Image (cartoon, rainbow, N blue to C red; front, side, top):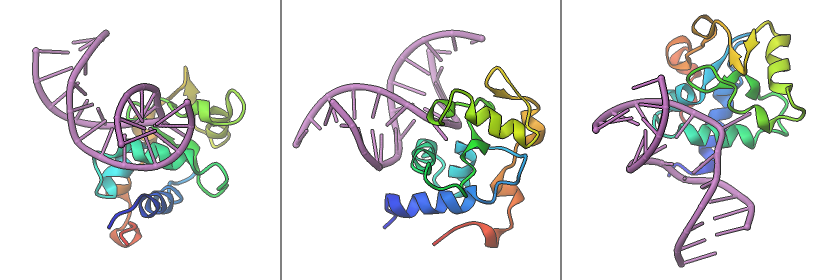
Length: 117
DNA sequence: ATTCTGACGTGGG
DNA sequence: CCCCACGCCAGAA
C-alpha cells in the first residue's frame, strides 16, 4: 500500500504549496497527510529534495521554529539566507514571530488541494 | 541480516 | 525545566 515513494511525493506536493514568506513544520505536514507520527519521514523527504528547486525545503522547520535542517543546505547559512530573502526574520537559528508566520496546511489548505492518492 | 543514526514530535517522570 | 522512551522507518555501515 503506502510505499515510501508515494509518501515522499505527497510531501512534495504539499510543500510546494507553502506560501512565500511563511513556514510550516515537519509534524504539521505529516499530520495533514494522515501520518501524524511520521514527522521524521518528512525530514527524510526534504533531505531527498536537494535536486528539486521547486521544493521550498527551507520553509520547513521544527515545531519550535528552529532551523533544524540547516546543516543539510550548502553553505553555512543558506537556509537562513533563503528565509531572510523572503522577509522571514531568523535569530539564533530560530524563526522570529513563528506564531504569526506558521502556516498549517491542515487548516489553511482547501481539502481538494491536499494530496491523497 | 543486524545495528545505528537521525531535517521529528509526544508523553511521562 | 530537563531528560528519556517510544513510534516511525530509510539508508548507511
